[in-house]
Length: 216
Image (cartoon, rainbow, N blue to C red):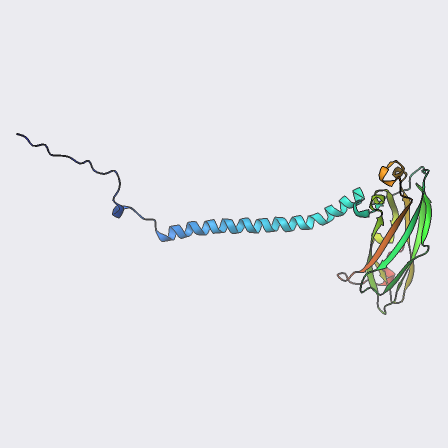
């Protein structure tokens, strides 16, 4: 009587004791690469955000000037060929920023202007300091919707202004109201607009001599 011997097939699974482990330095190198990629992505994101922030300033200014958003006035090279039918009152408001030793007043408090008509108004500015001082004027009009139709041909606000110690000058603004405002529904009930200026000191730029100040 023959006896059958059972045969157990060898296991396909490798013996854990025979498994080849990865060297520690290989794992560390992989982790280092992953950390480097993450750090690079973070730095890249920060650089892009900073670039967008700086780029947004001129873009925002261009947007405001194009649309009149926030009462931003427009810039024109010439006056319109034809005048409109409406007349509006333009009032002038002047302010001085903190730390600026100047006085700043309009020649007249207001003018009545027909749309398409060009007006020139002077503002008297005096430096009360004993040294030259440079400043820049910020501006806007109210109500805000009027900004799209308030066009300046020339203005002291376009550039920084430097006054010598004790110097007093008359600074002009040449402007008109676009006749197109007569077709705008938001301007139908507006009979007066206010042009506001605020002079702020310029500290980041060296003060120029009074003789170097652009003549207006």
